[in-house]
Image 1 (tube, rainbow, N blue to C red):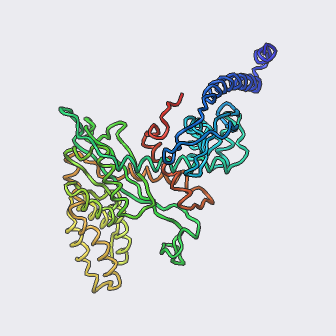
Image 2: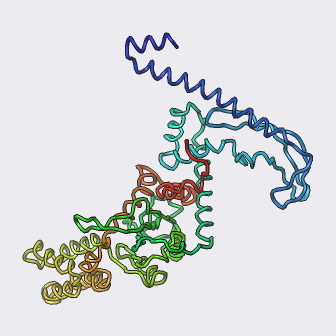
Image 3: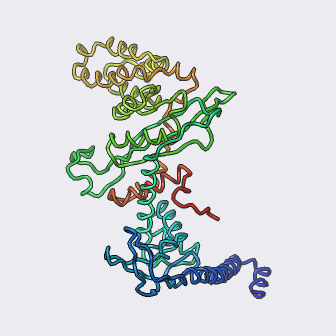
Length: 436
């Protein structure tokens, strides 16, 4: 060690410093592993002749003391524990495995957590390499990391479901809370293997789907506005998310459950924000009848651009026409947008544009009450669905839409459950031990 330090002082070689770091890490891991092994060995010594079967509580008898190899963040250790058999259930079990969190796995809870966090963020092979670089542990196969990520993600999904099913307490007496809460909904496609899209219509030229929609819900509160600009300000740390491959009806139930879990039913003014998709407003109409509904302003502007492009052949100045419509949109005057298009006399000048133009105009007239942007701005409301679009990117795209990726729902859904919890800063419901 002295020789290494002298070499570092003389040459400033970063490789020498890393060698020192790795040597110290290895020594610390050996010491720590010995300590862990001692505690586990002590815990494994308690092997009474009888134990309760975890399946049904029957009395099970001790069969033998068996050894299990467990990989931890510090290295591998041998766990010797009592193994029991239940004659009634015809199953065997080791109570110590449940106490240590290693039932049906060879990974310690700490290493399983590291694998799941890495697997939820990066491709599995890259995750395995990352863990090997950081900890010095070689998991040997990518499949181990993939299985662990899916298992932890399935557990995360079960815990989220259980939370949503749990009864909710009322608000604490005399507490002042936020005045506004937001439910922002959207969907994004995840690339799937062909068997996951069989017989499903899609936007591909052959008419078949290549993706499956992941529905995302974003929930947050607002207490203040920016005093300088009057713009709304999201309450720090107030955002949580939900995600699912389930159809809109199931997603609606999950949305309402998260709304209640967050205590939003005690907040005066709920706001539902979306891009104009019908399933979003069906959810709002059915489950949030007293909420203010707002079409994302920037999606509305995109529809104006599409309308202008469609009408281009009959417009003398498309830019001026679009700006004219945008002025009406800013004031919530959707009927004026329809009037401006009617004045073009499409049946006479461009009959082939009548039907598509009516469809585009219908987007504005149907959503008239959701496009009162002057009033929404005056009240200090958010009018853009950026938070949920950002969630579509961070929860789905960054992990699931990399080059060459194609998933099964069974493979991707657990990953999305982990990412949803992580982005919501709610890892603690999955892993109770603080990360140190």
